[in-house]
Structures are given as structure tokens and as C-alpha cells.
Length: 182
Image (tube, rainbow, N blue to C red; front, side):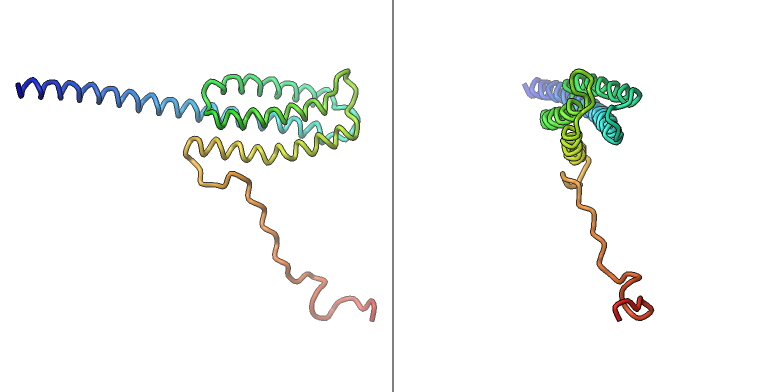
């Protein structure tokens, strides 16, 4: 009877070990797949953002054909990358990415109105404001991706740039200055 119990416990132990090993391998593979998908999505969204930014940098009335082509390519590539990522990335990252891509698409629609006419000054201004908000969202999305993968301790929002300490300038302090007003 003892031998039977030992045999059953041994067999269950072997089965559980195999099952746990399989699960650990599957998780690490899933993590690697999520990491690759997050990296591709991050890169794709950045390219789309950069293409929109490039179009806004042109101060002429219409976006030139070359920049427009790059914008269309970046937008199409982002759509494909996002579609593939939807099957792999976490729900939290998926929601944030969808919101950001929605905002980028709004900028796109402001810059490329129907009928091919150039965007009005008001539309350009609105697109600039919206794209500036997207820049902060890009950082937040990347941090969310990194948190999801367990590889960051940075804050979810971009830290503010340190302000320079007020100090003496070449025009302040001791003699040698202008005699104006004396």
C-alpha cells in the first residue's frame, strides 16, 4: 500500500512539474511576444506622430506631396501594427494606445480636410494644440508599456524639466556696467 501511495505521489509530482514548466515557458514566450509587440506599436505610433508633426512644421497653406505620402504611409503602418498588437498587448495598454491613436487620427483629420483643400488657420492651430497633448500621451503610453512588462520605476508622467537657478548675469552685479540713467 505504501508503495502505491509513493508511486501515485511520484507520478503526480512528475505531471505537476511538467505542467508548471510548460506554463513558465508559455508565460515567458508570451512576455517576449508582448514585449516585441509593445516595441513595434510604440515605434509605429511615434512614426505617425512624427509624420503629423512634420506636416505641421510646414507653414505653407497645403501639405506638400512628399510629406503627405510619408504621412499616409505612417498612418497605414500604424493601423496594421495596432491591429496585430490588439491580439497580444494587455487591456490597459490597448485602451491607452487606442485613445492616443484616436487623438492622432483627429490631428490627421484636421490637417487633411475632405476635398483636398488646405487646412484653415484655425484647424492648424487646433491640430498643433492636439498634437502637443499627444506628445505627453506618448511618454505616458511608453511608461505604461514598461510597467506592464515590469521593467520601469520611472513616473507615469514625464518629469518637468528643472528650471535654471536664478543667478547673476553678465548685466548684473558690480561695476563696469552701463552708465545709462546716472
